[in-house]
Image (tube, rainbow, N blue to C red; front, top):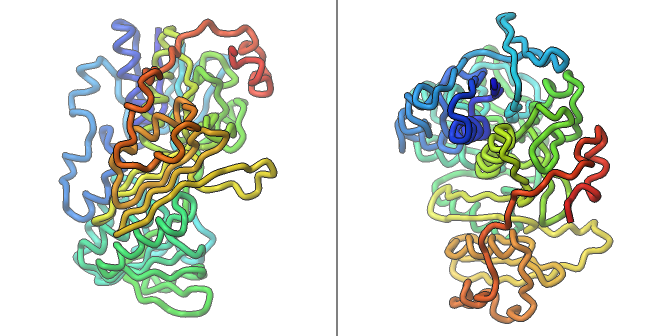
Amino acid sequence: MHYLLIGGSAAAVAAAETIRGLDKEGLITIVSREKYYPYSRCLISRFVDGRISQDNLYFKTRDFFKRHKIDGILSTEVKKIDRGEKKVILDNNKELSYDKLLLATGARPRLPKIDNTDLKGVYFFHSLEDASLIKEELVKITDAVVIGSGFVGLEAAYALARRRLKVTVIERCSQVLPNQMDTIAARIIQQDLESLGVEFIFNESAIVINGEERVSGVTVSDQDYIPAGLVILATGTVVNKELAQEAGLATENGILVNEFLQTSEPDIYAAGDCIEIQDITSGKRVVSATWFNAVLQGKFAGSNMASFSKRYSIGVGIQNAVQFHQIPAISYGMAMLDTEDPHSDYEVVAIEEKGVYKKLVIRENRLCGIIFVGDISKAGFYAALIRHGVDISKHKSKLLDPDFSYAYFKEYDFSEKPPYKKVNLCWDSQYWWREKVRCMGI
């Protein structure tokens, strides 16, 4: 059996490790376009600002491939999948056959529609390669502009501010983290970063990056000019689904998979940032670019590829935990109200005091989202209530009491529901993604 995995980050590595634990003799090959051994993208800001060395970015030891008998092919890109022949064609025209294939192709930074993004000194904040180049620049510059204030943009701003640069963040919305945090949480995080000297411009867009060969500044939509020797583009990501599309696999916003992480081709699986998952809090399919989900999906996909059937049905699309400066924050589940939902019947329980903000979102007597800022203790407990769909109707008046805990649910089994089930025959249909309700196994 030859297991071929495309991608060299969280999902692919977790899948490879799982496969090796279940199949000691099968051949495992990882093909990665990056030249580095598996490293954590979540930590590149700490590398840029000097809190950790490059060696501490790697989440597996350098002998990981050898120890697990994995053939690691780095600095190489898969250009085509031939489903009929069950092989892939690499960018050096070599071919690799497979019995089981995993697509863990991830996502790439979105290139904003701004003039002159190709100038020297303009970077994404996505990879170790980006981080290494940015570090080299820091000895030559004094000011920087970050375009975008999502998690990546704020990580970049914090890292640069720690290196004592004058940092300006441009955000077209009216707050930081517009897709992850509400206005109260955003204000607390913004004020914390402002205490480091980071400046914010809201409700404006960058329209041009100024400079000849090298960046000299950024002009925003009201024609204000901001000097900058470095510009970071942090305007979101794009799913790497083209390889799957060209192979004729089912895709929408991401690669479509069933609850066993299979694509529309039974021997091709997908996991990580490139796929859509069914979010248990909203019932909608979403692309979830989180490290935790990628690792978990990789483990499930690896198990299924090795013929140990395991159903992935616990997906929560939004789950972010971060601490930029002094303020830790967590957003989990449907913490942002869907005001366009005609059947919306959400309840909100919240407290805010002394730099601490806690918000719980409830629907039909079950938690569906949380935001904790400043104090994230017991966030794991509330996340478990969400994942397991626990009825909290008897405890609504106590939800944010200091002693509210698992002790209130002694009768409830919080161990993970058995993921091993017989596969329904309807999953064999080429239209399984249209027949999801019938295939739920309920």
